[in-house]
Length: 609
Image 1 (cartoon, rainbow, N blue to C red):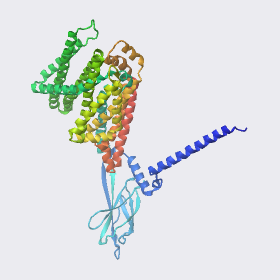
Image 2: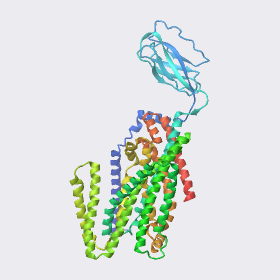
Image 3: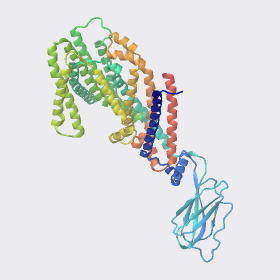
């Protein structure tokens, strides 16, 4: 059948396009071979094949079990050079291992065949030359056959002597019962360290990633909108809140440490303070409002919330002191179990360190919330002209504050030392940007501040995930020293970004029905998350956490190469020393642990999820 010209042309174009695509693919892969320096000639190199076989055989024999060994040494005398007449030098005993040399003498630099009999089958004897100076020279290595014999030709050096010399064969034989090697014990210690390194990193990263994941969920953040006046007041209030929170935590810690009370007093204070904080918060934030509270009641509730916050801070201060004192006491009295006391003491120190950071962040969050609420109230109640005038001033001040803080951070990092460049100029630019935003978005319009937080969170998480933990551990090893602690910090930082991304994507995929129903009741943002989001994300969160623990176990075997502790540090040492049998033992342990972790996490996911 004759085809129309248009059909023939389309078929030709399709065929030509396919041919061009194949040609382009060939060029791309050809260039890829050139860039990656693919050289198949190297695979046929006899030297490289010999090295590969040696390494593979060593890896196939992990150094886990060994026998006590006894060294057997057998000698056979000979002359070099040959004397006028060669006497009978020795009479071998056929009931014991013995050597025969052919010939019994040779010229310097000649060759001689060494044959051995009655040796342990499958052993590997080393052949040495013993000159009159007794300076041993290794000549070769042989392999004993199944019948206990071997034969090898060796090249002799040019060492002339009128005195009789000797060929010595030294072989190690297994005796007694097998036992675990030193490598096996070291591998066990380091693999246990690796597992717990990954466990601590996963736990710490999970606690931090869960709250951060809500900030990176688009469906939760896109509905958060606030007027420009509220945003500006929040930006200006955050540094004040951070400073106030940090100062409050420092003063509370100093006051708690200056009391010098013992364990019973700290225990009582740590028990009473949270009760006071809970009772005050319960009164100030009732679950149900019977009637609209008056202005006096609202102010009184704010004051009581302040009392609750102070009581909560002091509860943490007393708890930290209690853990420190109790941990030191237990460490001195438990003997071999003193690590439990040191753990309790470390928890107290972590609590004290985290108290300052947490209080500073909480202060900043509270002040930002108050600033946002104040901005909304003013936007609703003030006339438009007053709002615009207020926005010009407040937005300019907020922009100046924001860029001045950023410039101060850049100055600290790069040590510029010029305040005009790092503070005054950024503050001026920030003020101009604030005024420009007022001209564009001012008035009673609301801005999607939630999406700004969403994109900023995502950007930070992507940046952290792009940096491998192997790089992070180099920085932490400088800070806290080489060892597993640096590995815990590096894995934690990398896992925070990875888990926050996975958690937030799970939040974005929840059913919208419960979220809309809870929101329609007038619930607050926190109540919406607690009652509509959390019930839907608990199973996948558990699954992601278990999977991350599995990943951290595998990653912790690598970060040891950069000083992060764990079995990777031991594996790197053995590879650098070309001790491939010991390295094989560590790789076998890694494979066993990773496989076990996979089965355990699978079983836990099946039961829990």
